[in-house]
Image (cartoon, rainbow, N blue to C red; front, side, top):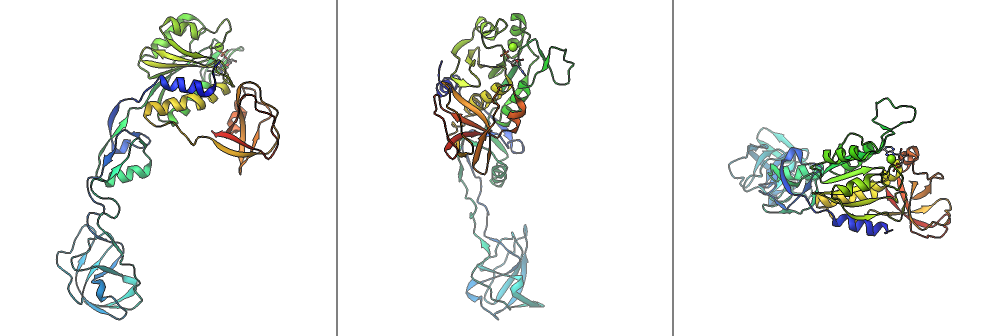
Length: 390
Ligand code: AMP
Ligand code: MG
């Protein structure tokens, strides 16, 4: 059995960054920028007024100074002339500051009578002018790879970039296996349960930027599993759920290998999630997850999320683990790395008493996976522990 970190390293060596595609800016949020982009203009493209007021020469600004208003500059409507001595231009936010002007006296500091203004309040030292290129300059770069946020989209728009090169979304095929499974909304027989894992994993993987397809449930027969693998054709990552341990009905490993899967590893020293397998199959990476709902979801956080990041070209997350103070003691850990469902509140972490890997209600209440190293000794309240936020 290999360790969790060895398994993750093996898994990441099965995948590489996907190719790049161009998408319209309006579709680029949540995608990963694939190569650096350069601004195509200065912003602002001219020195612009930051306030509504009067543009004058800074050297003339003082209490009680008077100016003659010779014109107007509004956003989108520059004033063409020049501001001379004793002159002012009525100006509004976003308008180009006219030649000769170097200060905008805000309208609240001025009294106006006809064409004449007088500075009636202390104008202060802020010139109220945004310099040309003060936000960004022509050619300024945005580095890649970068998960594009709404703020990034606003910035790219301002840079006049209408289409964006992004990494193609990873395509994931999710296969539930088991004669006992029925889709949500179906009519389960007395000995059946609802397939939940594929739905939880789809939500998780899509939150990480993948596109996940839920395939029809494979029955516990070789032919049904073969059909499911055939339907997964074209995916970058094929994930099976269940049927991966050593029971009589656990056929995933056999069928996958019959279909040419080159196994990278099988079994990881972790709890929950020991019967995990991975390899390459055709053009795809294949991961066989254990069927217990909590095991499948924990393995999703620990293994599948990093695979999606790698396919997207994002670096491995280095700050994924956080620390908290234990609020109750913990017994010594066994020989496998344990991911305990836990709740963190205000920096204090408590593991749930019942860690059975089938309990989705407890997983849904948890916001953390407390990580216990193999053989970790008993811990007392007040000790600092590591966890993965979920
Ligand atoms: P297996 O690994 O196939 O032996 O499954 C282990 C346990 O997980 C069994 O109780 C299965 O009924 C359950 N299970 C397997 N697949 C799913 C699924 N997709 N959704 C919910 N439970 C599942
Ligand atoms: Mg099964």
